[in-house]
Each structure stands twice: as structure tokens, then as C-alpha cells.
Image 1 (cartoon, rainbow, N blue to C red):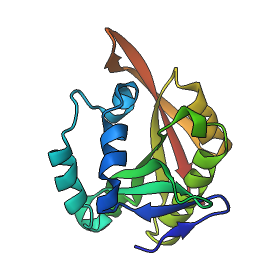
Image 2: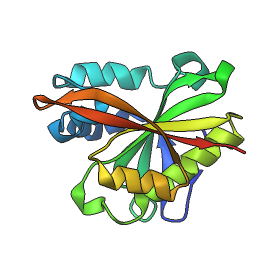
Image 3: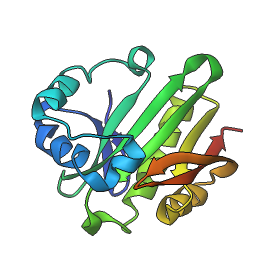
Image 4: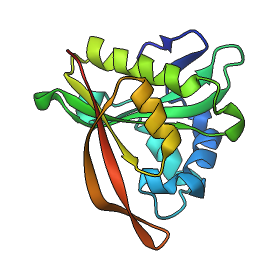
Length: 175
């Protein structure tokens, strides 16, 4: 996979050197709600995941790219394509910036624009969608600023910390 380069960041494929970064990211309990994680990941399991991450999106139906800051090559997050359905020309997208110190710097916005361009240009898809809990105001703002439109509400969709939350469906359709 070619590295996707932006102004301040670039997106690259997972590498074996990402084990510690993934271990910290996947075991951060504060992001488990959006990743549907219910238990910590071992380094053994994550190493196996990295060893299989070479699979093509057409085979795996998903793709994870690491978001890196151009100046330092520091990995700061991931952008995930999931539930890839070539027949219907759609894919889901999720994005995470791993550290609070890297939030509000425009990295997620730039990564989202880059991945949408990749999806529409290289995968020739018709739409990208995102699932966002209604209390996740920063993500709602991120996706709305990227021209995603709210298409629906899934009532009581996510059970988290003893209560149900509604989940919003956002879509970006390639016109």
C-alpha cells in the first residue's frame, strides 16, 4: 500500500514496529465503547493481528492505517475502514487519535479527508458511513465538518456503563 501523504500527516500501513502503539491504543478502556472491545488485548494476539494485516481490503473487508505526524513520524492514531461491501460500493469509517495532547490540531480532519479521497478514488466506492454515539460531540462535529450528513438514529443501540445510548448514522455519498 502506498503511503497517503497530507499537509501535516500521512497514513501508512501497519508495521511490526507498531506493536507497542497498538497495545496501548487497544487497551485504553476509554475507547472500548466505540471499538466494541470488552476485554484487554494481549501482545500475543496483537502480534498475530499485525502478522495478518497485509491482507488486501477486498479479502479482509477491512483496512487499518496508522496516522503519523509528518514532522516526527510519530504515530498518533488510526483510521479504520470496516464492513467493506464492494457489491454495494460502501464502507464504514472510524478514526481515533490516541492522545489528548494530539487532539484539536486538525489531524483527525485531515486524516478523514484523506481516507475519503482514497475510498472514492482508489476503491471507486459510492459512500462512506460512520456510526457515532449521540453524546460524542467532537466526532459529530468532525464528520459534519467533512460534509457527512446525518441519515438516521439507531435507538438504544449501544449499551455502555449501565445505560443505553442512541447511535447516529452519518453518510458521505460521492456525487
